[in-house]
Structures are given as C-alpha cells and as structure tokens.
Image 1 (cartoon, rainbow, N blue to C red):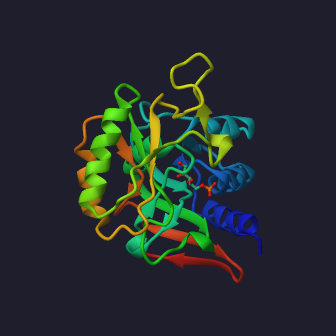
Image 2: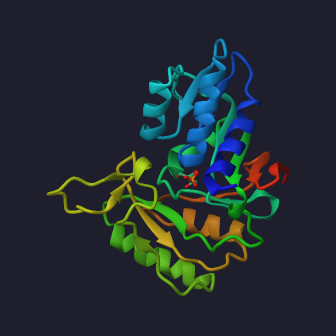
Length: 243
Ligand code: 5RP
C-alpha cells in the first residue's frame, strides 16, 4: 500500500466515527483531505463542520459540507486531523501544513480528537520531523534568537529556520511580492513559521511550555494530551492506537 493509500484508509475509517447532527472539526493536509472527502460522501443530516484552514474550508465547501466557525459553534463533538509524527502516548508533532494554530484552537474546543496518519508517521521519540513554531511576523528574527536560546537549553543545537519553501504547498500561503517577507510562508493568520530540527525531543512537555513563554511565539506544533485515538493506515489495513 502506498503512503497515500494508507492515508486514504485512515481518513475513510475516521469518517465512520461521525454521526448525524455532530459539529466536527476538519483538519488540514493530505490525510485530512481524505477524511473530508469520505465525510462528504456520507451526506449526514445536520452535520456542521469547522475547518482548520482556508484550504480545508475551500475543499469542504466544494464538496457541499455545511461550514461553521468557532464563534457560532464554540464546542465541537469531534475533530479529525492528520499529523506529522505520532509518538508515545499519542504525543504529536503537527504543523507541516502551517495550520497548527487554528488546528490547536479547534482541537482544544473538541470533546474528542482523532488523529489519522500513514504508518511512517509513528515514531518512538518525537523530533525527527522539524518542529513547526508559529511566530508573529513583527520582530520575528528577535523572537527566533529567543527560540534558539530555549532550544539550546534543551540540548538542541540547530537554530530554527524560517520556512520559505512549502513542504505541503496546497495548504500554505506565501507572502505577496513587494512584501518584506516575500518568499516566506505566511499562515492563514498572517504569521511566519520557524522549523526546529530537534533530532530527538526528550521532554516534550517542558519544551512545549518553554516555547509558549516566549513573547512573539503564537503556537508550536507539539500536541500533547490532546489526541484520544489514532487511526493508522498500514499494509494490513488500519490499526487503532490509544494514549
Ligand atoms: C497541517 C498539519 C498536517 O496535519 C500534517 O502536516 C500532516 O499532513 P499530511 O496529512 O499531508 O501528511 O499538521 O498543519
């Protein structure tokens, strides 16, 4: 099974968890897109969906799903989203698609969160995938210096790199030409992303709280104690992981 087939299998399995009348958070990325397609195909009555990015909103609208917002539906029944890594206890690294802030807002507003992924995303230690850190554009280089200090304190020598090349172009937006940040990826909220090549994150909880203390850091891609279930697509079908 190709990685895309595994993503599709996970997305389709997750769609079976949705019931009529639910308010559902829609994740961002290629795996989440399979879920959105499978969900739309079910044509459930009374379903309302809160997208985590403009890209997902566009897809959901195209497929005829009814969209809502956190303002109109502040509490969600379920969110289904992809991930970049799944570690022990369903600790995650997310944000490869630059939607981490909206994703975390929607996840935290949800009664249950399902993460869907292909088997290659499952790791023993988080950190092989560079950790995305969303930073306010104003003074971002100063903020990056403070991020480097925090990373050094966690024995991570590599400074985080400003994201200029979209790893998942579909869900990313680049600054317009003429902007001082031309060529730099901007999030749906207009912020920039620094990617920290951590190698191995030995204390994700401490790193998460240290990063949040930096003024200018809006959010980071460590999703800890948020996923209730993981649906992993593999060669032998889907596997369910619990925290
Ligand atoms: C977006 C994300 C995505 O869920 C993550 O990057 C996984 O993407 P894909 O399903 O395309 O592999 O966190 O911000």
